[in-house]
Length: 135
Image 1 (cartoon, one colour):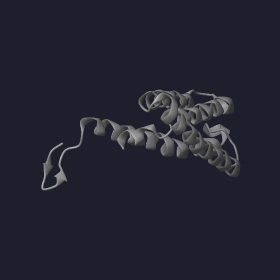
Image 2: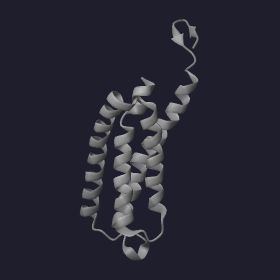
Image 3: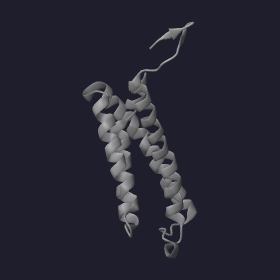
Image 4: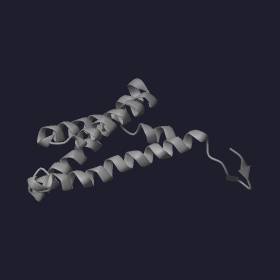
């Protein structure tokens, strides 16, 4: 890093990679959640699962809540037990696999809920490791 008039003009090289990781994590969490709720209440003949909107919204609310709570537990475990880098890598890979399960044709509700469970586990593994690494 170089300083010019007290202003840092260049970030460390790893910071770019972590910023891209944060962008990918945000996309995976929020954009895919929005797509999943649409998939839940889309009628069966149009390729969705045909669940009513209220139930679909409740499923996604519980998913989001469990994801945040799992992240708290994962952050504690990463901080106290295994470190920050490995959980972030493994959690990101597991999240990619979990989201990929959603594109399997005719997976139905069982595969959807397996994907949700894997995403919650990935949130628990990853925790807030990325933000701790940036800090």
